[in-house]
Length: 114
Length: 118
Image (cartoon, rainbow over all chains, first blue to last red; front, side):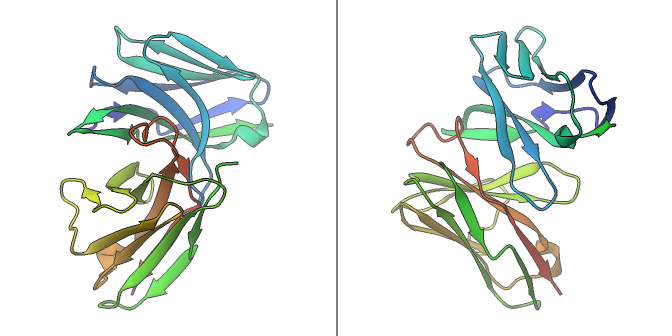
C-alpha cells in the first residue's frame, strides 16, 4: 500500500522555467511533509518542508504548496537551473504503528535542459 | 552542521558472509537513527528505527535476525547483514535525528552504502 505517491517518474524542464513536482498521499494522519533532493549513490538532502497547518512555504527558489482536502502537495522551483537536475523525493511524516516515521514517495527524476 | 557519515561507501561480499555498515553522526548526538533500503529506481523503504541504548524496532517484513542493528552510543549505529545473499544487494542509507520523538521531522541522511553480494 503506497501511502505516498509521486506519479511522474521523470520530468524535463527548460532552464529558467518553472519546475512543478507533484505528490499525493492517502493517510490523513500525516502532519508534516518534506521534499528531499537526491543524487545517485548519495543520501537524500533536505530541501523544504511544510506543516499540515499551513498551505504554503517558501524558501528562495523553492515553494511547497499543500492542499489538505485533496491530499496533494507540490514543489515549485523557479527559475529552474541545471544544478537542480536530480531525483526529488516527497516524504510524509506521521505516527505509524506507535512511532513517528517518514514515508517516502517513489521519486521524480528532474532534468533541467540548458 | 548535522553531518551523517556512513562506512563503507560500497562493499562487495560473498554469499554467506556477514557485512557491517557503520552510521555516525559527526557533529551532533543522535538519539534516534533510522536504516533505509533503496532498490534501483524505487523509494526509500524504512527497515528499522534504533534508539540509543535500546533494541531496534523493525518494520514489518524485515528479519531482525538477519539485519542486526546496534546503537551503542549517541553517535554510532551499526547495521550488520548476516549470512548475506544476492537478494540483499541494495543501497542502504541511514539517517539520524537530534530530538527524541521528533524523528521524522528533521532527519539527516548519510551518503549511503552500496552492498553487492556475489
